[in-house]
Length: 153
Image (cartoon, rainbow, N blue to C red; front, side, top):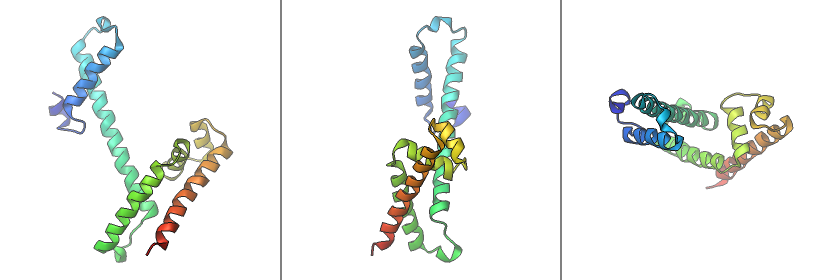
């Protein structure tokens, strides 16, 4: 039924079903569930939709990072330049992944979500100045990486 509704994945329909049964077990008191079949279906459906949303967000994130740091013009669209840009993009993504969690979140909320520094501070439970410092350090991390890359032969 999951495969018919959502295809072969991701996530794999068997994984979604497994997650649904796991939720029932973790819930503990499953005797109170009036319609077990409906509960399992809804849980598997919600899990599948959550994974699909996450995958869409991840693809959007990669596109945004590519456009922010490596916008290619039509003159730049040679095979070599595209390959170099993709390699550099993967490296920048790794720089971002290696940032401390709050710095990474502040940077992504600022650059990708377009939130203000005040909004970022509220969402992360930190002051506005701390949010600003996180963003500045994140930008510096990326800039230092790009500067070092540009010096390589």
